[in-house]
Amino acid sequence: MNREELSKIDAALLIGISTALGYGLSYVYEFNYQAYYYLPSIFVDLTINTVTRATFLMFMIVFMIIWVFYHFGYKWFSGFFILIKEVLNIYIIIGFIVILLFLGATFLGGKTASIKEQYMVIEQKEELYVAVTQYKDSVVIAPLGVASGFCGFTTVRIQT
Image (tube, rainbow, N blue to C red; front, side, top):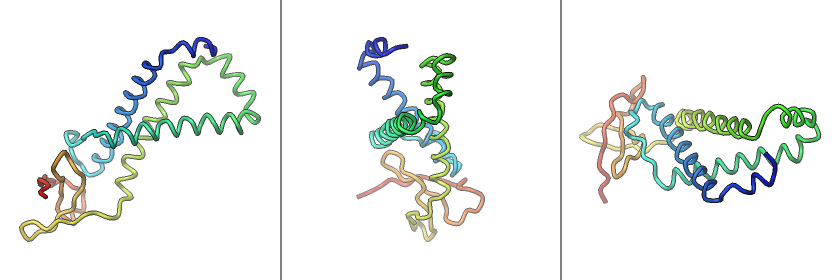
């Protein structure tokens, strides 16, 4: 695929694909974040904030990879780039990058939850609970001090 063929791709198609990738990456990230706390997937709530963050990070990572390889890697890996041009086409490379993005979202979701050190603590009926995540207008809480995961979760409605 040369530059002329790439320039024929409609901008609306690119926006639609990037939006779908943003939603997909957001879902994978949120799913793995909540899977760390043993929460069911029903609590995955995609909002404009999570989708925007995932889409922005996706673009930043892809552009950083392209920039680094273009400016630094081309000299060192020129033989490798020739091999890629001869053997692989652009669709295989794009597919590989998309797979890497989803693997990164999977890893970051669980890793973000595992390194979290500060939680909001809620006192309810003389017991302490930890706010694990937010779902719509409720907070998902779990008993404080559960050693083997947050299996006993419940939701509490946020009231102002």
